[in-house]
Length: 409
Image (cartoon, rainbow, N blue to C red; front, side, top):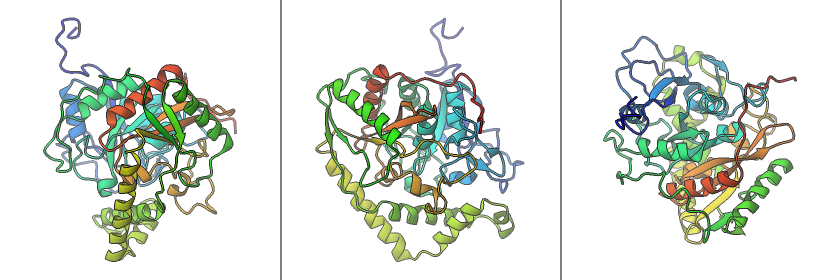
């Protein structure tokens, strides 16, 4: 009725929305996927993202699942069990924003808040065939600060690029609780979505320095890149020379885990995810010199990518080198993959560099599992990433599952 009268409460009046269970929501527990957090608290504060959504009239449906404290790239926890992929319930949806991705793919709400410290928006977006955007660091205010520090971003997960642009317009509104947040420019990210790709310089990196990509995924990504060229972009094969990205990322990630778990007693930690405890142990073993060395390497990676974007408007890669694997597993090949980060080499480098990056669906494998194309923009180039994503969406519309497909395995 308010829309009919031309008097909506805001840009999202009445729009069903979910909040990841990492993000504070007034009146509801935020348990972060952990049994170590007591439900019986006041829960008296909204995080900036939640507050902005409420102010614009969004209808909050509930909290979406996450692994414990969002530490890994799949979604299971002792608190909520295993979250499964709607394209095949025997497969993982990825993580850590796996609950948001599944809700989105199944139409359980239109807008979904995700967080991304090493790929946690883009990984589940890639595995479930939705659109997910990790904005430039600071574009979306966040509070309280993530224990994983300046690796952590917050952004939209949606079925369409236009919905993500609308959601980002709201989420990017200012909040003084985040001292890292960028100055608010009042931008409406829906404006310019249809400008097309003519004249844009696109760098295509199929392996980002040597990642092994499943042939079927590589072929789907290459087909999508060909479409970018047909749409008028100047596409070149180009590899940014990043050097080691896994080492500095894992140093910072494990240090964040150690810092986070220092807030909990030995009794509380005893019931936590064993993988998270192992990660925290690795963090506690680090020296100050180790941490500073990782920061220096991170700075070099960021500088390399900023210089790379002087030559190219966007960089495109696969979102993931593989299709979704078995649910309930941290990694598909544990004998050669020590941690989740070893199977997602395309995501965490851009948390180190803090650039905007999105995952766009680019087809289904023969087994009916989604593949994703990652679009990376220059720092503060969020609108450009959305524009490229929209151009591809217009010529490569992506299907959605009508209902969960129960695994026959």
